[in-house]
Length: 244
Image (cartoon, rainbow, N blue to C red; front, side):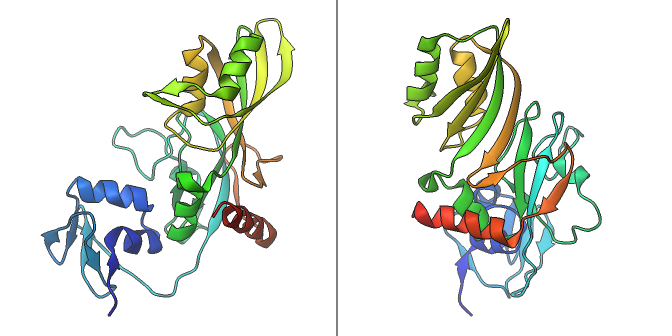
C-alpha cells in the first residue's frame, strides 16, 4: 500500500491541520506502530498511528464538511484548552458528527468569520502563505488615526524583523475618540492586525473578521454556524486556483 507523509494522513483524516500535525510530530507526541516519528516519515492507512496515546482511525471514504462560524469574543480557537477556557468547539451541536477543526485562528478577544473542516487539503490551501487568500477585518481603533499612520498600515509594518505585505486600508467612519477601519491583508501572522495597529500607538477596541476570500460573514450572529453552500465552496476553490 502506498505510504504518504504522516501529517497528510492526519489532515486527510480530519484530525488536525498539517501544520498542527507537524507541531505534534516535533513535540514527540505522535507514534507510528509504537515508535516516535519525525518530520518526513511516511505511513499507510493500515499502520497504527497514535497521538498522545490515542489511536487515530482512518477511512478512505469520509463525509467532508465545510463550516463557517461567527466566532464570538471570549472563545479560543482550539479544539481543547488546558486552561479550561471556552473553546469554539463548545459551540458546535450534535449535527456535527464529523471530526472537524478550525482553519487558522482568531485570538480570544477577536470575533468574526472562522472556517472549520475535515478536509486537510482544503485547510492547507486556505492557510498556506503562497495562496495569498485575502482576509478583511473591521477594526475599531482609538483615539484617532493620522494620514501618515494610514499610509504606514497600507504600505507595511515591520513585525519580528520582517515587513508585512501591503494591505488595503479604508476609513469607514470617524467619530471623536474612535475610528472604524476596513483592513484587508493577504497573509496571516499571529495577531497580525492587532500588532500592526499597536506598533503605531493605536488601541484596538474591537476586531471582527468579516470575510475570507469570497466568503462573507453577512448577517450571522455570534456563536452561530452553518455549512458552506455549493456555490460558496466553488467560489473558494476558484479563488485558491487563481493564486496557484
